[in-house]
Amino acid sequence: MNSLQIWDYFLTLAEANGIKVIPDIHSAETNASGHNVNLWYTDRISVEDYYTALEWMAERYKNNDTIIGYDLKNEPHGKPYEGNGAAIWNNSKAANNWKYVAETAAARVLAKNPNVLILVEGTEIFPADLKTNSDYHSTDEKDYLFNWWGGNLRAVAAYPIDLGRYRDKLVYSPHDYGPSVYAQTWFEKDFTEKTLLDDYWYDTWAYINAENIGPELIGEWGGHMDGKENQKWMTLLRDYMIN
Image (cartoon, rainbow, N blue to C red):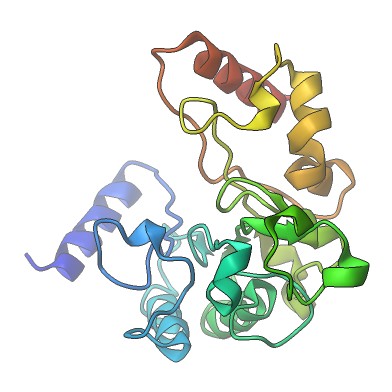
């Protein structure tokens, strides 16, 4: 079987076993390390290619309710020094503005299938001061708040995703990881659910659900079970999601 036939076979197995599916575009190009690509386009894959790919899938599977949603792009990210090569989130129509692109992509998917959910992940950076740096012109890391790739949804407070009449299809989907992936500053203390909320979770993504701005689904989380600190973090996040 070719790759499309394998995918369709997987969908039949998922349906037979009562499993629902949310595809994501993990990389603009087919690449084992494609998740390292910052944006939804490259010098080989255009933004129109990206939109067209989503439209094609939405059209092809519009009558297949095994697919319940589309995660529009895995972990858009980038550092301040990368300039236009980094994902930003504001009210502009810049090519690297994830908010604008996500809204455009969502509209094109929903035009094909208005019944699916639209999952929007966060970015990596967000300006520490919107009054002075809302256009992300600064290349100084001190002017930004950093988070996990896909995890930074601080921008939603100022620039929420607008799906118009399809607003009930929107799901924000942060990614969150523990100290086995990277020793973030919020892991330096004897962390608890409260310290994680105070130091990171709440202002970064948890506020969206807590303040009824929109629903959330933690798209990626987990990690190694061979370290006490990472297992502690996983337990705390699991319990927070359940409660």
